[in-house]
Length: 423
Image (tube, rainbow, N blue to C red; front, top):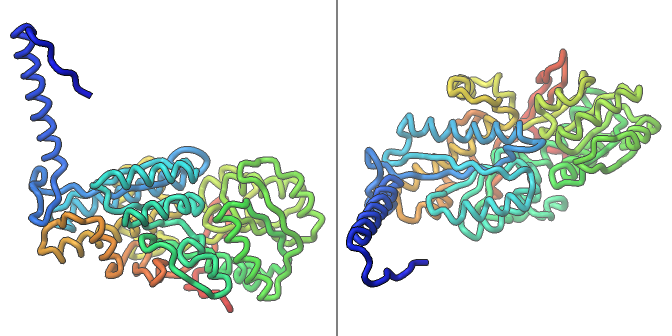
């Protein structure tokens, strides 16, 4: 709101006010120039004539799941910096805008609104949690803002609730992911536990969240198909840390393993309390427990199992440069389970921008957000985690999974396979 100047004001004051107004206007003009402009002529740009293009990053960078969230933030940042260093898209300067969702759906929805309102944001990487994604998908879709998650595995996010009966329908045209689905991951875990670990009696527990419940359901379906027996089921609160009641039930069930659908903040204490009770059976979970923090929370993790998407990046020739670049970049936090997938998610957006610019005669189009979404169907490249492309649902075409076991106080890869659930 502005106020009308009073008549008869001191000439010196009026002159000073004019100077301040001129300075403000000049500064504003410089700010706009520094940000670059986007039009079919390529824009004025900043130093070097580059247009700023922003990739939003949503993950929990505070709270219990921050170890995974910080790895996501850093890996996306590395992709943007690498694209700039290599001049991957001439005329474009990539910048990441990380927002903390705290692992909470309502915060994720607020972050989605912030990304949407910033015209420079042309794509979003994240989030970590499927439940958070459910709050972000519709607003991002309505805004035609591309979203690529490196970690969401809830099958319904892409294929709808009907996927369980074979009635698959794409839910949102803007949603993609470099992580494979719970349908694949849960089934892979069931096969590994039954056929490789030779365990045929399991107690099933989940944390009632979208990710955990979906993973447990997929595991149960495949485990029973393979002849395994679920000797008991239970649900816990993801914020609980006292699991004595459920541990007592597991101990009396005769289970030879526990399968837990959830994440490491609860899984670590659950596993330790299980062993403390004298029931020395392994706990197995999905990529939500495949973290160094699981080992910090669980002094008796030896023998526990986890699955994660893709092969371990340390074993991939395609990941050697990523690992070296991440180390040299000096990030304080590890890239964790989703580092490689995050880099590939961010690079998918870089590739989509590259396609959109090329299709516009080498100039950054004024409607870049829309053009990036349209280019996603053409994105295909060799990434950190292997070949990257997306199917008709927005799911990754790479269904490689790996089983890990805690040996000598560290996660060790045991078996990898491009897995397709048994029908």
